[in-house]
Image (tube, rainbow, N blue to C red):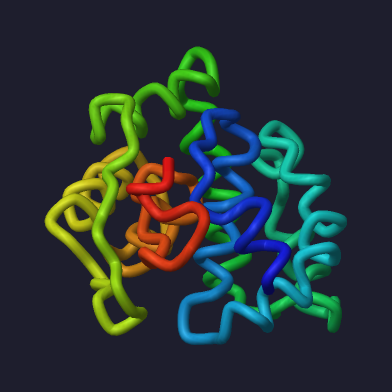
Length: 173
């Protein structure tokens, strides 16, 4: 958990494949602990071809059925199907990099920096996460409610919610 926080969480990410992975991880987390997701992260990377967009987008119902027997991952049909659907949605752009540009346009290309004193200050959703969730759904994304999207925006660095005591807090940047 500490390594994920220190090395990855909240760092501005623009690579569409990495953004896809982060979005996928957030969908798996819904209703579960983040520790559970991180413990299964390597197995998910294997199951989803290292989050190769084209390979995941090409997954069939038979592939999903196979994944439902894989005890190393979170076996939730809707979450697994959402991963394939979300890869397909990203590939609707002429260039997957356009997904990253589209996403970052919601924050004018710059992370939103919140002043977070304690974990209790963290919102579960915001108007931004509601807007992005609505727009993602219009583009065919699945399992992207406002809470999941807010966590994704944090993970991908569009929102910096590091506590003030953290080295990655906004005023320390």
